[in-house]
Image (tube, rainbow, N blue to C red; front, side, top):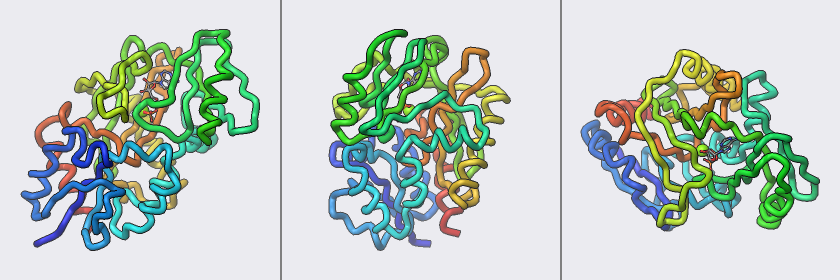
Length: 286
Ligand SMILES: Nc1ncnc2c1ncn2[C@@H]1O[C@H](COP(=O)(O)OP(=O)(O)O)[C@@H](O)[C@H]1O
Ligand SMILES: [Mg+2]
């Protein structure tokens, strides 16, 4: 078998941030020729068998251009339809409407006035990655200027109560490969962290984790609900990362469902995780 897999980064990180390094030998051992390319480099993606978004963390300010590039790549996994739906965090409202426990989220599109929760809260762009544009405010603070700054950049603002459990236990990321649970890791509280030298994301403190049954059950429900909204089978998702936090009552809440270009935390996982990823790539092509 001689197939090609392209891992996709961006101009600042054309071969990712290192987290996916173990994926290259795993894919190679399963018969793929593997290379990295930045999405907007003019590389010929059309002839590859699998084009896999891994570190395209610069799309937030030019989402339309990014989506039209996604649509031009026939063998993109996850697919352009999935990426279109998932690059705007308004999907959280759809998942909440579908009955899932989601961090309470209100959307403030340009032109609409914002109102803020009476507790500490977060204002962030609905299209964003790497924590950029996300800011924490104390109860009673006026975040109108931050909302206006996001609007001026063309963003819809999202307002959420700050989930203070994040300061103690961080958020839990549950990674699914080909729709099946693979591994989990925690990410310490981000707001207050410093920017990586690439300028694309706040630096992250990660650690391996074993998720509770409750968190796993929530992730299962989230994946089924998202697949239903997208009209696909869950197995069609090469990768998915379900980020959960504990609510005030200790029960898990969905903070983010990452189907676009999540760090998959291979550095925090068992050595076989990269092979599970490579196996899931083959399954997509079968
Ligand atoms: N409602 C919230 N409560 C607590 N922390 C939050 C909240 N929203 C965002 N954060 C913090 O900001 C980070 C980035 O927000 P997130 O919604 O995950 O967007 P992205 O990772 O796409 O930039 C999170 O990892 C978390 O540390
Ligand atoms: Mg996140």
